[in-house]
Image 1 (cartoon, rainbow, N blue to C red):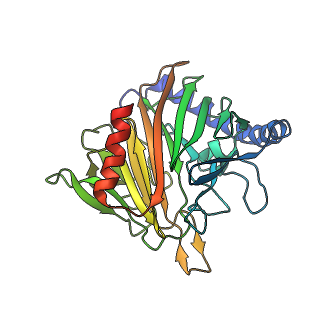
Image 2: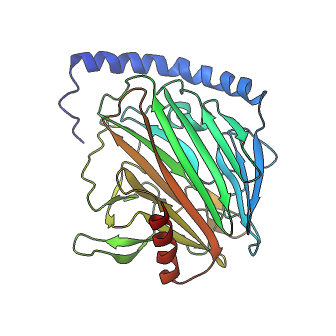
Length: 330
């Protein structure tokens, strides 16, 4: 893809400085993670209504692997297991994207490796805080709250501390690794160019292939250097969504993910992003999303809200009613 014309010689020097600093930042990241983890809990359990959630930072604990934050586990009273792969997480802050991602995995997955602390705010609420990250210098706060009977709310806020946005954007990426549902599809209202407000089934065949769905009015082009690694956020689908929510089925439950805006939101799918489930002889799909900020300003807060509903399977009319009720109440 072509880069923007404003990448001139001074920007080229900034990019070289950025590249030189990134390897040292990755090393500092690992030691910083250990230092912060010593002073704060790695995870907490919240409960409200029919839901039990484990919220955690990037530490390892039991079967949970290091490098995955957010919702370690989410269970419904009528379910038999967490909807997320036990070793990893859902609503996991995974990437900071500026168009200058490196091949180094610690930088590519910087939010999963950078220091992060957890604070319990109440029996139903907790917050993750990530200080400015070593490479991209983005600070963030993610607050999770359970609300009876079956809601998990997420409020995300971030702040850029240095101007590293050579391509004019900042995008953040969340992954939810679903625990081998029989139906790997995400469903939303949208469709192709000639289809509007149609119930659309979205299930990609391969990882990194036509993975990301933009809103109908989203025309922003994220640019990248030539020859970089394939990614979910680079590969665009022909589908467009019209309303900012999606849902998927998990055993006898339905998980609905609703956003408080369309601007900046992109939906992403992988059929196998969470690896495999040997017992069920199946892959773990990833039901992901992104938040894109154009021309970010330093030390300015940006954010959005998400409401998820985990409830027994229901009709599309009931799903749409959940979204409408929440949107009207905001």
